[in-house]
Length: 351
Image (cartoon, rainbow, N blue to C red; front, side, top):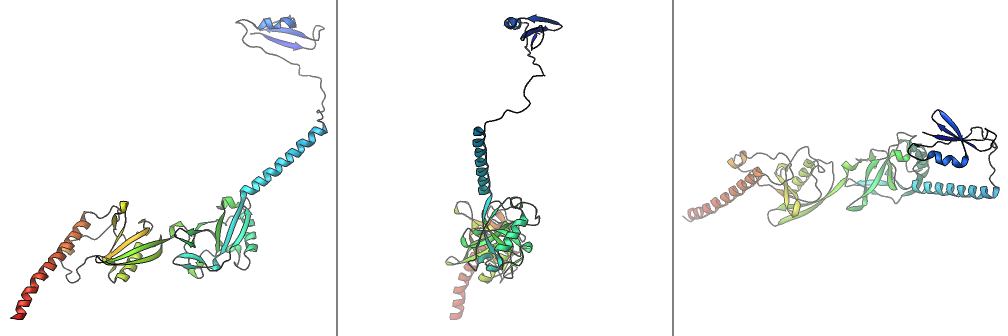
């Protein structure tokens, strides 16, 4: 390998070059140094410079006419950035006090047109938010420190009614609003966290109110529609008891059907621990009184029929189909026997 060095001092010349080839050092002319790095033996080239360079220690002075526009431009960019950050982090909120609402059919209905417009930076702390909340809702809440804050959203099929969903965590006063869960523009319910106008309120998506259009079927022609608002967390047995009271029968005699794929009907099997949400009930539902034999409880076709057990969501199984067929056959046989007995009774009366 070979290398060259430039030096300002040496053999009395201001520009002297040296060829350093391993342990050998040769003086070369500045015009001939390029020839030293030709051929297959030249692998790399190193240049050395003196460390003690004579220069001024004071930085170069930039002319004032160049500094001024740069400073002005930087200040304009800083203001633009600050305006942008304020814009993207500003939250436009609507505050609703629980004292101005009531519960109707498990839904929240504002009774007074008192919606407070509220703006705040989501980078602010929870403590700052609570302080501003106390000022904005003076007279509507007792203390912002003891309030619960939930996101309030309108129901899909009832835009005038609302439900309380996600809760904004206000326990850690030092965290930012974004960390507490308040990230987007929304309407907030500020309440005591337990009741609305003295009635208990269950917040959260699992307790969302849902509308059921239940069609009560009695025979082939008798039908009656019933609109119900229930929570997704309500037990299915509660709905069955309500429908049984309307049909004036035992809850165990009520059979439900829901709309399945392609418009088909799926029979629901009763599970004591099931909720309306777990059964994926929504929209239309049919309820009718099942065939039973109160006059002959020891009927052989009834005593061996297994009770309904679990919901599989695939419609009636083989046992249900057999049960219904047996009931229909028994009903038809009973009618046939009755029609055969009527002529005999008429003959006996004539005699």
